[in-house]
Image (cartoon, rainbow, N blue to C red; front, side):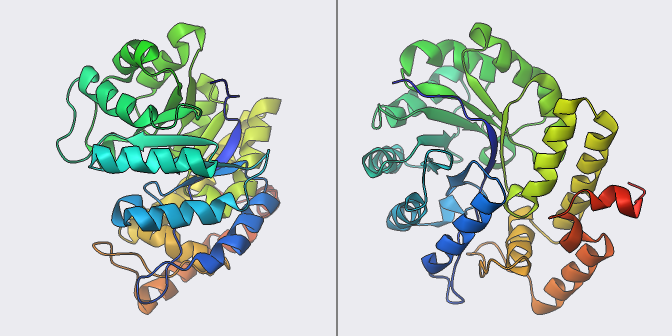
Length: 316
C-alpha cells in the first residue's frame, strides 16, 4: 500500500439531520459542492464533528456512501471508523475499503480505554487489517476519547505491526509530542494538524495538512492564513488566526463546539438540522443571539473575504 500524504485543508463535516433526528442526506450534495468551491481538499466523515459515535453502523455506512458520490482526485473522503466495539470498527473499516474511501481513521475507544501503547496498537491493527489497501490514520484526540497514550511510543510500536499506517490526526495541544511524531523515522508518517484555532502553531512546526470543523464555513480565511504564512507574512497570518480564535470563543460560549458549529453551518446556508441526543440543539433564542454575536465581528462577510480584515482595520 502506497499513498500520498494529505495536503491542504480537510473539513470534518456535520451530519445533516431532519427535525425528527433522522439522517438528511439530501443536503450532502450542496454541502460537498460548497466545500469544493471553497478550496477544501476533502472531508473526514463521521468523526467528532459528524457525531459518529451517536450514529448506528448502518447510518455511518449511508453517510459515507453519500459523501463518496463527490469524491475525486483532489477531494478525498476519509472515513472515521472508530467505535467502542472492535468488531463494529473492523466492519466499518472493511466497508470503507469496499466502498472506495481514500483512507480510514479511528480514535481510541472511549470505553475500556487503552492505557499502554501496545493495547492501542493492537486495537488499531485489528481495524486497519480489514482495509489493507487504504491508508490508516490514528485519530489522537484525548479530550474526547480519554486515550492519552504517548504518540511517539505508538509510532515506535505500530510502524512494524500496522503495514498501512499512514500517520496521525493529531488533535491535541501537546506540540512537543506532535513534533516528535513529525520527526519520527525522518518524517516517515503524515502528522495532520487537528486544532483549527492554533493552526499557525502547527504550520510553524511543519504541518502540511489540517483537519477540522471550522474549515466547513471559514475555508477562505484559513487558506489565506496558510498563504500568508508560506509567504513569510507572519503578522497577517497572526491576524487571521486571532480572528479564528474570536469565532471559536463564540463557539465555546454556546455549549459544545459541535452544537454551535452545526447551527453556524445552517446560518451559512447549509441546513444541517438538530444534533442527536445527548447533545442539545440550540434554541431559536440562542440561535438569534449567536447570529448577533457573529454579526458583531462581521463574520458573514469576513469568512468569505478575509482581506476585509485589513480594510476594516479591526483590532484583533
